Image (cartoon, rainbow, N blue to C red; front, side):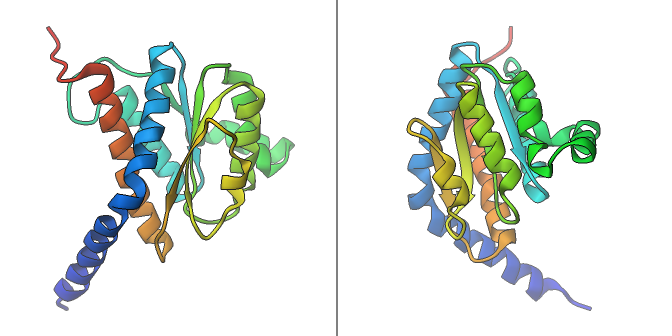
Length: 199
């Protein structure tokens, strides 16, 4: 069976979706990257989290920050709260499911750190709890949310950054969130290191 047309259609939709989102997303992405950069300049740490596909993107972001995106440069302190399977299942067994990110964040997060949450769909309760815990710890939040669910946006405070994705399907929102993660990392790299070359 020839799948070329299905693949071409999918790629074309993705290209159009990305192109139509640039004007809406450029300023909030820049704002989010600036917050993250300032936290790193003041020896703060970055924490990321998300559920399902968003957990994978939060891992991608944390990995790009601790390793690198495109250029050789020093590692940056970033931790993915979604990656600790043992910790998450322990919380699920003993606590409320909404505590899977907020409990470790209360233990590890400090004033001056920053939380990045990613939410493209599904139940946002655990992410809302994480935002609340971050604020209790004196942390800023960068949220990647979508326009059809304002729950997380309403949990943010002044000083936080909200990158709101507008897309019809969850898969399109995930694709945009991946682009956002790469853009955040690239802007941070450029702000901190320019064209860094290791000696």
